[in-house]
Length: 340
Image (cartoon, rainbow, N blue to C red; front, top):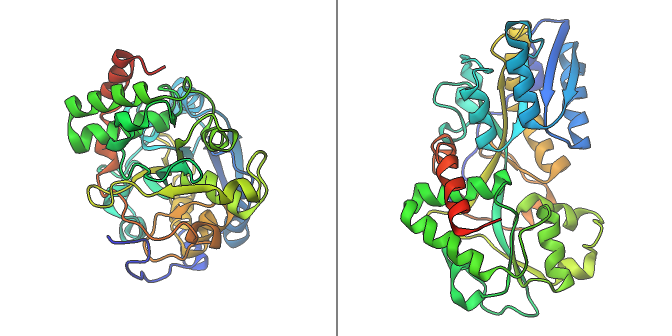
């Protein structure tokens, strides 16, 4: 796939999806997505189907543990969360079930869904390299280069306990092997400008404050700053930040996934499947981009202006369910090289 505009897929309208759901009823949603813009997704689904959404929101690990504890008595119909590693964690915990959906199979690329159809990706974020254009004239062009001694004392990154860090290293293991991944992680630690800290927006703020010259962040944090005011990232600050979609001559840019699956004991299973199918519709996919500056999972869906500003790129086509299997090895490497 050369870009997210590579091909056009027949649009699936909400009204068509709604015919698969009951005209009334409810849906119990457990979600660790904390974005106010998702309100539009929920209200549009309810307007189209008459299905009321009851929500419980919280930390992904806490929600998974809750579903385990509730067992067969769990009211959960859907689990929505961010990052493939968490989706795989939910699968391993036995709190999701396999489903059959021709719509999801047709809409969601194979690499963005579980091999057993227990979870599906609905939006993506590229994890890319940002840099201070005033200080860096030769930015790293791929992830491997972040470990180059030429960038000693310049790199800001999140902690090793963060799932984005874990999944990035897991993808490096998948693409380059454990030995190369360990060497890379040790090199990045040597290049740290400060101890790992903060969220993705803090990595961008580090460029503005001068604490670091190079950082790694998901695209949607930066695209949001292009679209509206973000504390510490005003228009002048953003204008001085450059970006690189890494590994365009190799595996491609690493992608993080936001997705969901049907709960193992879903009391409203048909409504749950209809909701996932709705999330794959053009309307919902466009809102993931317009409302939260993400990339749609469905190829051919248009991007919001803020996301499109970042330009076309080649994403890593590696199977994300396979990447998630490397998380334990990634954490062991982090511990060994002293990545806090």
